[in-house]
Length: 302
Image (cartoon, rainbow, N blue to C red; front, side, top):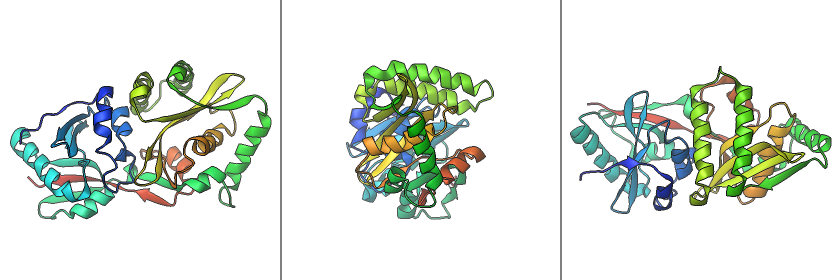
C-alpha cells in the first residue's frame, strides 16, 4: 500500500480526532492537540488508512521517525508492519518510532532480534490524582494549598478566573508577549516553537477540542492554561500552563482553578514531561505524581 502523508493543518483535526482514544494510552500524545501544537517543531505529517487508523511521520534532529499508530490495540501489529514496509521500501531506511507509549510497546512485544527498544527517561509524562490537585488536601500538598490561600487572600476582590474562548485570544497574545520578554534571549529553542503553536491553537480554537482558562488581576490576564480530555483514560492533559512568575501563588491558583472549573470529571491528570530540565523536574515532583507515562524510542535493525 502506497501511503500518502500530508502536513497536519487545523482543518484536519475533525477527521483525526476519532482515531485517538481507541486504545489504552496515558501519554500526552494520546490526544490530537499535542501533535498540532508541535507540528512545526517536529514537521508532523499524517496519513489516514482504511478509515481505521491515523499514521504519523515526524522529524527530530534530522532523523525521520514514525509515531505509534492511532488505531485499535488489536490492529497495531498490522499498521506497524505497514509503516515498516513504507520506511524500508519507499524511504530506504529502517523504521524508527519516537515517543512510543508504554502500552503499545508492551502489547506489541517486538522481537529483540529485529528491534531495539530504548526508554527515554526525560520524555516520560507526570501523572497525578485529579482529586489531589483539585483539593490540595493532605500533608504533602500543604505548602501548595498555603500558596493558593495566600494568593486568594492577597488578591481578594481583584482576581477572577475566566473560562476562555476564541474571542479572548488577544488577551493571551498580549500575555505571551510579556511572558516571552521576561524569559529574555537565553531561552530554550523549543519555547519559541511552543509560543507559535499556542498562536495557532488560538487562531483555530473553534476547530479544536480544547479547554482554556485564565486568571485576571485588575482586569489583566496574568495566567492561562490549555488542556484536553482523554475520555478513555478519564484523564485531563495540561498542554500549556503559563503564569506571571512575579505573583506569588499564581501558578498554584491556575493549576487548581483550571482543573476545578474545566475538568471536574477527570480522575487522572497528565502534566507532560520535564524535558530533562532540573527546575521543571523539581516543580513537577513537588506535586507528588502517582505514576509516569513512559515513552520509548524503537529502532529497527536494518
